[in-house]
Image (cartoon, rainbow, N blue to C red; front, side, top):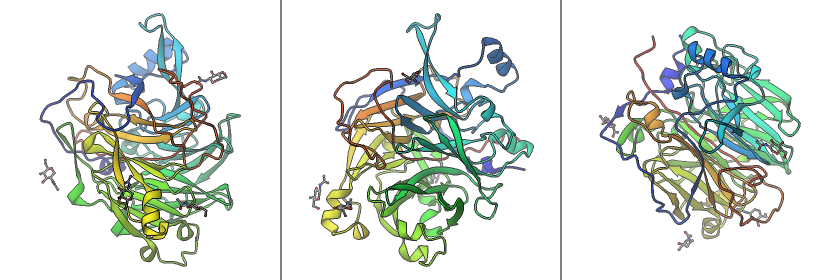
Length: 454
Ligand SMILES: *[C@@H]1O[C@H](CO)[C@@H](O)[C@H](O)[C@H]1NC(C)=O
Ligand SMILES: *[C@@H]1O[C@H](CO)[C@@H](O)[C@H](O)[C@H]1NC(C)=O
Ligand SMILES: *[C@@H]1O[C@H](CO)[C@@H](O)[C@H](O)[C@H]1NC(C)=O
Ligand SMILES: *[C@@H]1O[C@H](CO)[C@@H](O)[C@H](O)[C@H]1NC(C)=O
């Protein structure tokens, strides 16, 4: 009975009320909303197909939530994880389409990537549930992790093995796919949520993926086309004490573990954190790159500090700043990693002391995924997930729920290998020519327990 998603998503909601107003910036840097949606929509082949999808409940607009974000050239890729039924596509990029009926003269829509055919629910060759992606700007490759099942087919019993698909997004073709063996990623009990690339000798060589449900750090060795995992309860499990996330006075219960993951620009250490938790852990990449496990994970992992509140995504810039979300504060914080590596002498001894607030805005609720482009901007998505899992959802909400934000932080992604001076030009409402591509990161999972289904 594929209750996986049910186990994963187990949200307890206590609603006291809602302050749903356009927010004010309280951080040191202002963020702008590039795109926002009350409900997201797709580039359907035609209006008839769309109506048919709605009639057949293949498309239930309110159930489509924007989650992960990555950029390459003028394309902004976003994921729409199938956390509820009625999500017709799980991987997309944002397009502007002329519209006679819209006040602006155009609509901002999601175009399924790489195609509609690759979005078929129940087809194990297609994408089932993608929460996050990573892009290697050097090769123009996108790494897509698919957990293999969805909210809907977890009820009907159709489950596919989890897989990784690598796309060449410059030429739009599939380069490779890796089906995770059952002994590495369990079909019945995985939720691959976030990923980061490791570049040994300047080349994308390992992918580190968090399994927030089965509490694993999964490694994919790109050259050998093989996968293995590490499990460490103490650092990867959810911490009950931190299972209540309070956002805009609503309490959401999260029970998932290891999630956000980032890598330092020297590719010597990986950092991660659980959703239900505030502690940040560090593990040397030398341990992760060794499939034989010569060094015990537990002997090498270090707790280096904590975040002001629970969060999802985290990313480290080329210059060594870690950006991460603090859900309860509707904020993004920065850890000045270089400053602390001076204090502590080396990255291996570093502690997370120099943490400061960067962006905060009460309209920025539930920041999921963070990305850095090559022009100095930090991009992120917010999706008000506390509302998504709220039973009254849809009845009270009259303003945008999903948003893509951008803030100029003068930082580039950990895996940007070119130097392009930051542009001062601010392009409102369109990603074109803003970013050549982007960075990393992560995310989450929620949980909701709906006694409905079953
Ligand atoms: C990106 O630029 C190319 C070439 O200028 C254009 O054909 C394409 O439509 C653009 N894509 C988006 C998403 O704007
Ligand atoms: C979480 O919230 C629930 C309901 O609001 C409460 O009963 C529980 O004690 C809280 N748990 C913690 C660890 O604060
Ligand atoms: C990365 O390595 C370079 C050269 O070894 C060193 O100068 C720099 O301080 C390192 N950066 C970090 C963040 O450790
Ligand atoms: C950098 O470290 C010094 C000494 O530990 C500390 O006083 C200072 O506040 C730190 N700077 C930042 C930006 O956190």
